[in-house]
Image 1 (cartoon, rainbow, N blue to C red):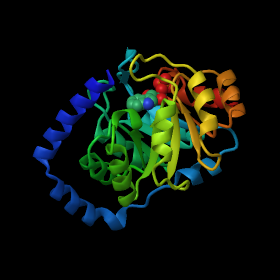
Image 2: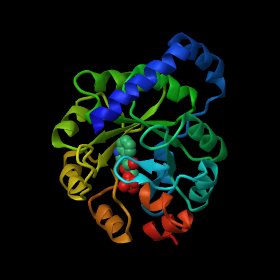
Image 3: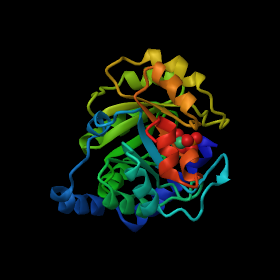
Image 4: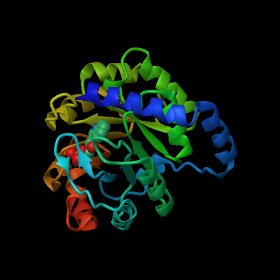
Length: 265
Ligand SMILES: O=P(O)(O)OC[C@@H](O)[C@@H](O)c1c[nH]c2ccccc12
């Protein structure tokens, strides 16, 4: 499935690049640079009394299909912000998650917190694009970036001033990520409890991988988190933040669901 999404993404990027070549993006970026004020994730996390939440905006997922097709990104972001969210993650992938770049732009202008661009970022073009969309943080999935690609994408993201959530799911991926020149103020580790090949989630992934990551890094547990008990367990594992999608986009009252989850409601 991951391979299929990545292949589809490469075609999507090729089309975007044909419509708007990289040099045009670069030019647009130069014009925009002075108007972009990146929002710091460590700062947003520092203001949290409870477990920091990265709340996600997505209409569908590859594993569950449609989750909330009528979701309005601005309204959803507003609810999250009022509930004290630390960061908002916006899925911009159109095919499997029914997101768009426009969703990200809308969300970032209506909130004060940092915004994460959640997509399958596999070419430098998408990093320039992320910067132009004013994403504060980008997701780099180790499993989708074999060989030198991970280092190349990380280097380019850093050069563009993007903070990175480095997503890992296996011990080998932890090693690959830790071999990069990471900076703890700018690079964060996301342990994905979901196996991107089988879609199963298990908290055991976080339990096993967390001890392999040096304490100085902000560590986030992702996927399949829906109860306060799970959040309490993750706290014991020395996890600083949780990334939650499905449980919030399917809730009748997403703000309340967020507060109940972390015990601030
Ligand atoms: O909806 P959930 O189970 O709360 O999971 C959210 C998030 O972790 C998940 O959407 C995700 C984790 N890694 C990804 C990579 C790409 C797309 C999506 C994801």
